[in-house]
Structures are given as structure tokens and as C-alpha cells.
Image (cartoon, rainbow, N blue to C red):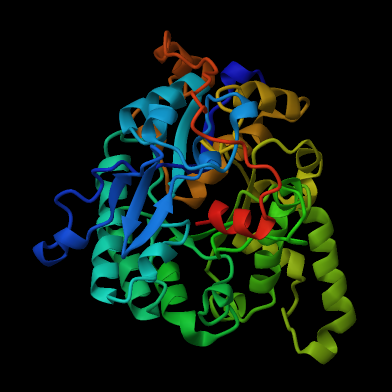
Length: 426
């Protein structure tokens, strides 16, 4: 399929929260304690909440910047494309990149909202979290009907409150929650505990997908304190592999057969071997470990319950039938450093050369729409939704690579990898 004929719905993008996010959204008793943006003496725009400083990590907002300017230094809003934080500009960037739909993970609260959960005042934490969800659903997504898949974060510190928030946002049309890839690393009960049963009951009842993004536990795979950053970046998909194994061997799918998980930003090329390893482990060991899937294999369970996604993964595309065509979606990762915006359609055309059109459509938009109850075609026809049609709407929109003034920064060489990992997932 030609690049201009593709229809693209991304199940993993990101937003940088605008400074006015919480304005008018909190009860009076919490107004003075709301998260807010301040500018440091160095010129960085950072969020502050509960006396903590949460910077905008550079790699989280590098769309449109030359690769030599990538880095982990904090940034100001002037050093980002406005599409990172401004909904009107985001839609223009989506059109220019040929992207019809997008699901956006949070930034400063962390992917799983753990920044809010760290507040000792849980009343404040809940108020801030719900304000965030209302802003995301009622303003960010609602400002551009048919262009965004709503996503919510949940109060992980209390499974009952978490279940209630699932039901609350589902009633607002939200069918995705961002959950941690490993609650145990946050000091919470693991996936093997029945503590989370109220949450699993709620997502099954409301048909909400549990989206698990790598790094949402606050940890990334790290080999040594002095390892170069390239090691951490290379190993990022291993976080998702670990989460998938943890969930599959847990009690979750046995107790909640209708539950569904989406694995975000982990790629797909590793999955065929992973499925083979699951089945081999089951065959060789289930009689003594006590695992039991009836007449199914673990690989069958994986295909029933997991949606996976990729940015550009030629090996995974070649092995797509071993993964499952109904289990693969596309992600754009805008505005992160792995994103191929605005040339993703051209990359996909090359990666999917020879793939039948019906299979391409499943991967690029149909699976995403089905899993997340997303219907962009209520607002426009499919002919108006292609890469070519959207780019025509964005004619004249500047997508050129732009160098920003980095004079106030010194390039960090040899940054301790543990520090980098902590900051990159904050």
C-alpha cells in the first residue's frame, strides 16, 4: 500500500502538559496546592508538586529537532514544538504527519500517575488525579472529536478507588487506563496478588483496556552504573517482555477471562520467540509448577488478551502471522525521541512492502479502533482520513527540522546510567 493511502491510528503517543492544566479544576481547599509550572534560574520550565520538582525531560519532546540536539536536559516550553502541549498545534502536526488518531500517555505525572500517588495527602492526590483525567478527556480529546483515544490514570494506592475511577472515566467514554508494568517496584502488591481484583472486575465490566507502557514502574533495564545510555535504550523492550511474562503466569487471566492488556512501546519482533518460550516452559514444567490453562497453550492466552504495537519493526512485520494479525497495532510515539514524525508513512510503506492491504489496515488502524472503541469515521469518511488527505489539510504547516539554542546547556557525557534511568521515567 502506498504511503498516501494508509490510515494511521497510533496507540502510543505522548503529551506535555500545558501550564494551565489545573486552572479551575480543583476544589477551593486544594487550589493553592495544585501542581504548577515554574521557571528555574537556568531557564527550565519544571512542574512542582508537594515540594518536588518534575522536569520536562528533553527526550520526551524532541519532535522536529535535529538528532544531535537530543539529550536528557530539562527544557522550556519555548524549546519544544507547540504540538507537544497545544492541542490545536498537535492536530496540525498529526495532519502533517498523516496521523488520523492518537492515544496520548501523560508526562509529568509519570505514565502511571505515580507522581500524584506519592502525595501524603491522598485527598489531594485523588483530586489532582481526577482533575487531570477530566482535562484529558473533556479538553484535550474533546477539542478534536474523532482524533484522540481517551486515556486515564488511576489511584494505584487504593484498588477500590482505582476501580471507582475506572467506572467514572468509562462513563465519560474512556476505554483505556494507563497502569504500571510492575506494581511491586512501586512498593505495591504484585500482579500475583488478589489485591487488584476490584480493578480487574471494573475494567472487565466496562470493557476498558489496561495499557502498560514501558518505564511506568519507574525502572528501566540497567546492566551497570557505568554502562553507556545506549544499553538502556536497547533494552527498553525487555521491560515489556517482563511485564507480559509476569501477567501471563499470574492468576489474572484465569480469574478474569475477559480482561485485556495493551503493551506499549515494546516493539513486536521479540514476540514469536517469547511465545515459543512460553509454550515450552508450560510443556516442560506445568505439572510441578501447578500452572493450568485447560486445552489452551500460553501462546493462545497471549493472543486472546494482549495488544502489541511497533513504530518501525521490519522483523516483527515479517513474523506478523506468528504473532497474530489481530494483536498488532501501530504507534507513532510523538513527540519522543523514537518517533519518526513526520515521515512515519514513508517508513511504514517500506516496512510493509508486500503485505496485503487487508493486513495493513488491521495493523495501522482497525485493531486500534476495535480494541479501544474508537470510531474516527463518525466525523469523517475513510477517504478523508488517509495520509494523503490529512496532509492536504495541513498544506503549508511547517515540519522542517529546527535547531534550538542549546547554549545554556553543557552536553552531559558519561552520565550515571542509574540517574538517567530515574530521570527518563520520572
